[in-house]
Length: 122
Image (cartoon, rainbow, N blue to C red):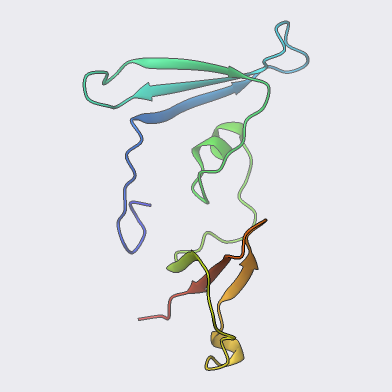
């Protein structure tokens, strides 16, 4: 995100360092080992080890998790600005031309909807 147009940098207090997966069945049932570095005040430089059965890399196109597993990126790494909002919209969006309408998906069990739209090029 630091290279995105808005230069946003989330601060979660931890930084992913490394990931290993034991081939075959591990004796304790947790073949994934992730190493995490603490970066929050007072704990800087300390490392933590997390053992798990699975790993899910949800860290985007420049995924450290994907790279540590040796998995290639399929498709393009887009650098576009998107707007996303969960809201209750009382409109039929008829004033938008078809190519300008946001993508709308219902939120489960709610009357709200998720609206997604790519920002126009500058």
